Image (tube, rainbow, N blue to C red):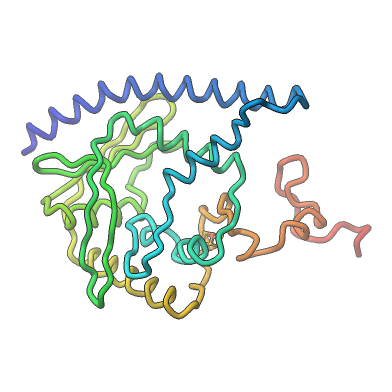
Length: 258
Ligand code: SF4
């Protein structure tokens, strides 16, 4: 088991080198697009922003069936998942491009497999693991800095796939922009599966009854398209001088507005 896992890890390292090159090319394309848009008012014959929106929609499919809860939904903020289905907010192009880049740079190493898991009470957990091998499930994630411990949502995701595909253990592999990597071998956890199923059933109940879940304050809120619905309206933030010159400012009204 360990030897075959090591072999696959070696293969994944080789693939990652390719992914790194793809990532760099994508960064350049993004930079070029942004420079072009800011340097000219000439309307593009093919609007690249339409393409971004189409690709973003393709990698973020919405699930209409309230009896199906995706692994991504239940491992993140439940309120976000609820609002995405009931009251979607428009993502900025920057948010969309970031997600596309994150997904596409590592997708070269994927061999995805879709599956589902019974959560009870007529609720199904559905998802797509990045890579499923004979004895293990792999999750590839990018990170600004390599973590000392896997992110909690990645524990939930991997554990869901271990039960979905009946594998004893899996590996979460983080890559930073420099090409460094950190791997965590994680065994199955029945306790975590129980909590995961609970979250799926809670979201299902709230969706059926049109009740928005409570806010779940975290780092994710900073780039969440629903931020305005959970905290302050954007026009108030501007009025108070938040985000002036791209930086946070003191949380109090300007003198002229008093
Ligand atoms: S802003 Fe935060 S609490 Fe609100 S939906 Fe987004 S992630 Fe959840």
